[in-house]
Image (cartoon, rainbow, N blue to C red):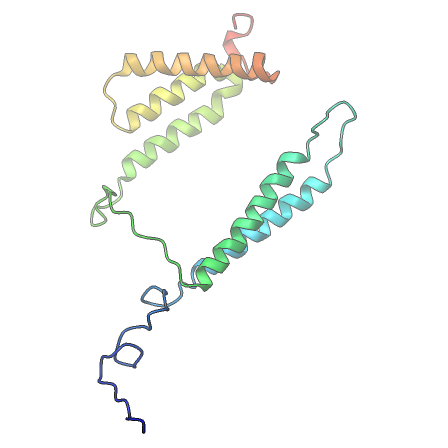
Length: 186
């Protein structure tokens, strides 16, 4: 003889209760906003893969220009598929616990405008002044826009980084950057 089992409201597995023991889905359901991002990753990865297949291969290069775009395209497609699977399973990103941002605070548009101005100056003058000068101005200007008050140190650091990167590209990679007014000196 069997005895009927009754479940009280709020018991596991009942409409008013908790999820069954084997159910590990987070509260709140599926975050469907992740699907467009997953689709974008797959589309960009597939296009990168296709575009790599159209590159011409030189006979003297053992690796060729196709390898890295193939790898990047495959990784993008894989990440897009994994993101879609994780989203379908109910995975959600955990909020950043240590983020030091006050969301109630307004955006600092003056700083953004300064950074855009420094970047626009760099783009407009890199051919005329050269990378070594505009790179130093870019570094010092960005540091100033973000609140640095040590102009001399910023300019010196910018010059060291700009000249160092100029030589790294020219000597190390064989890619000449614009020398500008320092043509013949660098």
